[in-house]
Length: 244
Image (tube, rainbow, N blue to C red; front, side, top):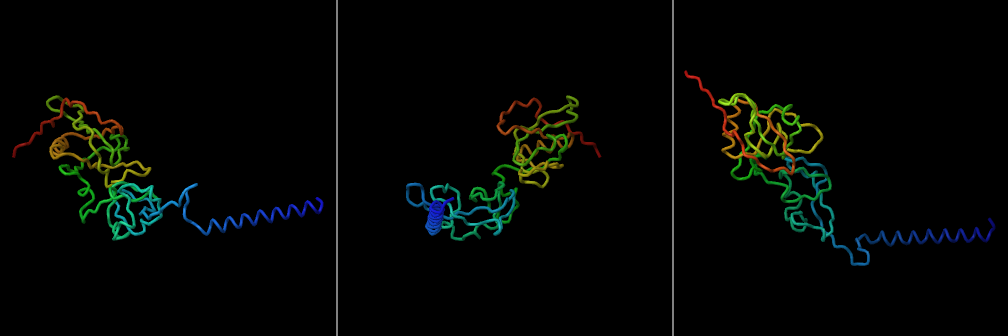
């Protein structure tokens, strides 16, 4: 390469590096987000979760952080630093109702102040009861029933006076917990001998009657299947009480 071309190449490289440096300095000195062809994007601070928090967990300070968030992307329920007088500590100790994942904004409808009560009693709707039934974990959908699933409940046994058989006794029942597990997240199959169900007071009596003489199984329903069918035999089997 001759000398004139070498000089031109060096000058061009120098000019390019200089332009890149100037651009870096100018951009780095102003960190305010700017929409293309528009004014700066206004930011606010919202509360987010920094690690996975399973349902039923009380929030702690290490779980939470304030981060900048575009104002126009704020939706109802998000917790804004400007609107939370108690700051981050106002959310500490509240119980998560559904699993929350890292980076997800915390929403007021996803947490509950239990006031010292148990999680289940705090989340039960008025007029509903939590009832735990013994189940065969291998026969009840192969152990794949998880909290918040919907199930039909079947009784297997001697359906006196009709004889042995299987009957559906309740339909579309919400599962509150499997064993001591309230959170449906995770990859492990939830094998347990107890299922806690959300039922009415009358359904508590029905389940209690069937538990005395039959084995109860859970039949998992699809997430979009809420159809109910008429039950042919919804009454509990006869219970024989021996005399003294």
